[in-house]
Every structure is written in C-alpha cells, then in structure tokens.
Image (cartoon, rainbow, N blue to C red; front, side, top):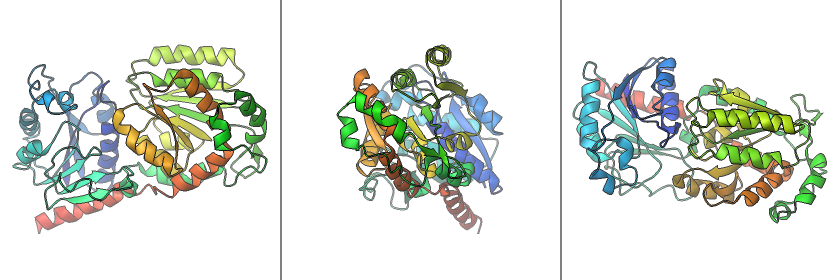
Length: 413
C-alpha cells in the first residue's frame, strides 16, 4: 500500500496537522506500506522534519493571489495559498511519477472539490478533520476528537459511502505512548494524598495564600517504586509553533505560583518556534531568580518518554490532548485557537482536564491564580488521571491502517 499525504504547517497553521500525519505514516510503513508527502512551502513548512523521519516531500510554490476569491467562503481558505482546484492539480502533478492507493488529506481549507479531482487519479481517500463545517468526498473520515454528540456531526457533510471513524479510540499516537502508559501512572500517582483536603471550588476563588499554605502537604507524589517523593515535574507545551507565545505567559505565571524548591519546570517547544531565543532568555532568568529548576526542550524526539515523567501539564488543545490522555497526565488547558475551545470545554465538563480559557480572553491575574490552584490540587489530578487514561489506549493508528489495508486488498481482488 502506497499513500500520499497532503498537509501543511506554517507559523499560522501550526505543526499539529503534520505531526498527526507523520504518526499515521509511521504506522503505515511499520506494516509494510510506503508514504510520501506534498506540502505548500509556507514559512515554517517543516519539510526538513518530515524528511528527517524518512519520507520524501514535494513542496508546492506559494501563490499570493490565486486564493483570494475562495478566501471569502471559509476562514481557512487562505491557508491553502491557492484555489482548491489548482492545489489539487498541483498535487497530482507533483506525484505523477508514482501510483498511489490512498490519499490522506489533513487540511482545513480542502473540501470535496479537491477530493473529487484527486480521486480521478488515486482510488481511495482518507480525510482527517475535526471541524465538520464543509463537504467531503472520501472513503474514510477520521475525527479523533471527543464530542458528547459525535454521531450526526458529519451526516450532511460526507458522501453516503464514507465510513466515519469518530472519537479518541482512533487517536493518532505514536507507539511509544502506549508503551509508557504504566510509567506515567507511577509518576502521577495511583492514589490521592489523604492530607489534601482542599477542593477545586476553594482554589477557583483565587485565595493565593491558602494555595501556598496547602502546597507542602499536597506536593507529595509517588516515585516509580511507590514511595513518597517531593519532586513535582511540570511540563508546559503549547504546541510546536505557539504563534502567540502563550508559553511565555505560562512561565511567568508559574514563576509566582509558589513552587517548591524540588519542583522542575519543563518547557517544550518546536524547532520552528518563532520565539525560541526569547524563551531561552526567559528560562535562564527564571532559573536564576528562583529556587526551582527550569529546562527548555527543543524538538523533543522522545516525547512520550519525557511526558511520562510529568506530574501534571499545562498545554494547548489539539493533537497533544490525546497524548496526554493516553498517559493519564492531569492537564490545565489553554486554547490557542478558536477551534480548540469546544473540545476543551467538553473535556472539562467530564473531568478529563481543566479548561482555563481562550488565550486572548484570559487575563494574566486569572491565569496566575488558576495555575497556582491547579498545580497543587491533588484531588483533581487523581480524577483527571483516571478519567483521561480510560479514554485513549494509544492503538488508534494501527486500527486505521488495518482498515486501509482491508480496503486496498478489496481493490486488488
């Protein structure tokens, strides 16, 4: 089975679409298939990263005016930097030297007009989406997000033959996340601290003095052997790009959260993060001014291993949501894009994670007080750990590849 991926990354789009396509590509090649990528050459296109993972990339030139009329129809149309039909034809031209069984497309600006053009040349199409706001012509459609009313969201948007793969059961996670589930559980802790009596409601009223007073008691965590351990590992990961530098705001808030001296703050960014040097300097300043450790991790190659050591996380919505759930890591979520808000709210309502708000509307004081409360709220950590871990098992990519292989075999027969 040979698969062509069409996805983009940029400072505006972020890295999540490429990241989840790479995960699926790895699962395809692990089962004997082959994969290639076609991407637009936006600033921050990540072609080097894709190639470093062993895949060929064809870059499409960015046009400045071809998409102007289409941009009126969708808030994401400008992400394509070409009309939908032109992009489809350019994609076909870029890969015409090879034959493919499947196209996998992960792009908010692509709809059924693009799919229809591609399907004249490549028989099967898998669409990855989570917006449910435009028409699709596909064999399979994947939406790995959590929605209370998942069924019915795509009924009016897909062709009758399209099979829907909905929910976190199909989350695209690398195999090492499933492997590190037990390790992560030992770090988060399998039981609540009996000494922690503070409730979520009390924290949310913003009594900073009470948070600090209770912290030494609630900061008891379990090490790998189950013994009491004072170390709290906190990760901040707002996505690979983080265009608005929400990471800096979170670091600043945590600096005044009264963290214990044994705490270790892990800041994770992608290699294409435009604020990389500013964040380096900020981490250095925080490390010098405070009694806790700060580490800046750039383009982490073993993310599951690092995440599995965390006590809790502060993160964005998007694909990393399901990585955190697989490992059962208690998380405070800040939405960095409007399309992340709905899922973040629903996960908060079910106790899977805590939603702090949309980055543009949450005020600095509110963010600081919310994070002060979150990092020491062991009762909430325990609840989030149990509920999030039950939602994702880390085997979604293999399920999807299995379905693709079955349909490919039917074509061959």
